[in-house]
Image 1 (tube, rainbow, N blue to C red):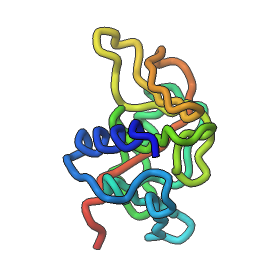
Image 2: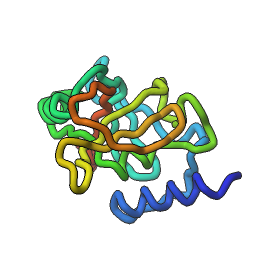
Image 3: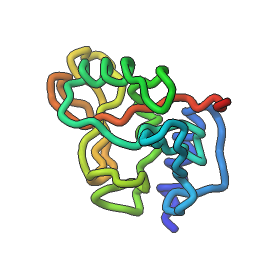
Image 4: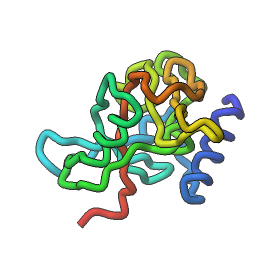
Length: 155
C-alpha cells in the first residue's frame, strides 16, 4: 500500500481532533450508513467519527454552500455545516481516481470547503474528487456541496 494515503489519513485525523483508527481508506468499513429518520441516510466516518449527509448538493457558490449546510434540517439534526479543508481532504483516497474517495456514490467533482484562502477573501478552498487535489478558487464559482456534522453521539 502506498504510504501517502496513510499519511494523509493520519494528518487529516489529527487535524480533525486527534483521533486515529486502525480502519484504513479503501476498506468497506470506512463509511457506514445509518438511518435515523426514514429516507434520510447519513454516513459515519469510522476514522474521524464525523457524520456526512449521504447526498450532495450541486451548483452552489461558496456563500450558497455555507447557507445551505447551516440551514439544513436532515436526519433529525439541524447542526450541519460546510466541512473545513482538513475534514473534506480527510475523505480523499489517493489510491483511487475519478472519484478519489471511498465515500459511497460520490461523483468525481469539485466540492467546496468552508476555508477561505489566506490573504484573499474572494477565494475559498475546494477539493477536486477527480484526483484528490486541493486548490482555491473564486467564491462565485459553482461547485458541489457535502454537509457534515460532529456526530457527538446520538440518543
